[in-house]
Length: 420
Image (tube, rainbow, N blue to C red; front, top):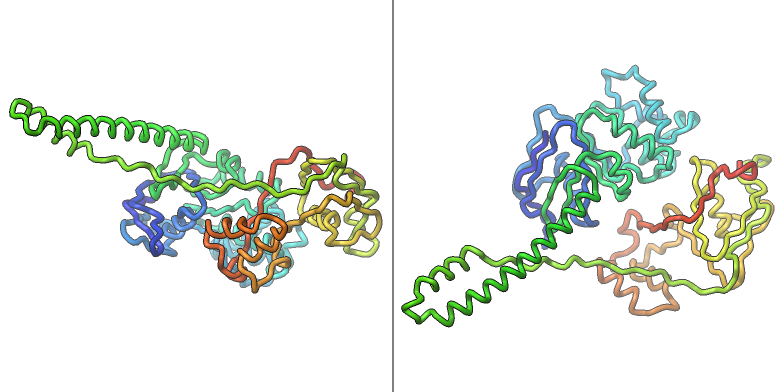
């Protein structure tokens, strides 16, 4: 059991936690939710001892082992298999089959196991860190966005693994569907307080909305009663005959106190700027072929027509050509045969996993907004930047998040004999 009792934490003028308290009991799997910047990751760092609370206590049983996936990469072994085996510890060093099973579940191929960890992509290096934590003999797991960089197959494997986890678990993820399938309780960080309830995220958010609606109705009703009592007191204070009633209302006002109006939580409305066109299709792909190894095609004889307003989801195992296909469609790579054509009025935009190559380190984030919106409203980039202080240089960011949308249809890789 972990007990968080009356914990306060702030950074400068920003208060994250105002006396939060909760418990994580045996075998509970707790999903942690809250807006970005409200302290979810900070809470994990407090629990695992990487930061200290300003006040309050976090009680952890003696010899209780907590696993936390580090963002910093510290690889010491020469192969992926050996590095992952570090999670087993010396007493279980012979259970290599467990290491291979976890790595396979997270999407590593047999050939990957003999690679040096530095040869892996950034996403796979994060997976390797996750594998070491899953393999270790911990009693609690603190998982911060564990399904980032995972494909659908690996996400489903991780879901089954966590459902069978015998210890305690705290999970942060923006994937509510994944969280709802895994957790037994939800801990919400809201208005600098923490509240834990049994059930899924839908139940939690419904309860929060109901509580705030009830609070606001009670506050308005109390204000009306207080005004009526204030009026009565001011009118009959000098009346000797009603002294008892006046004093009774004065005492009632003192007990009632004043409920503060709930602070309005800022939100950002967003819409895409798009160029209109009046064609029936946006892109036409005919006989596309490409491969990195001479004589071996990753994509072959690929043909597809993308209609106006289509939203297409590309799915498939890692290494089967999903990113390569997008690069071909965006013009980043040139096909070895075939062609990709679009009407002149179509302007494609391309966002890749890291998207660092298109950013200038000498620019601030505001400069990048302005460059992307050169033909639009000149006030828009500064408005967006002012919401989060985006005047810092690009080089101060580890990465910038992307956005996505629900698809109307999907491309599976391999799609057919045309994609291998």
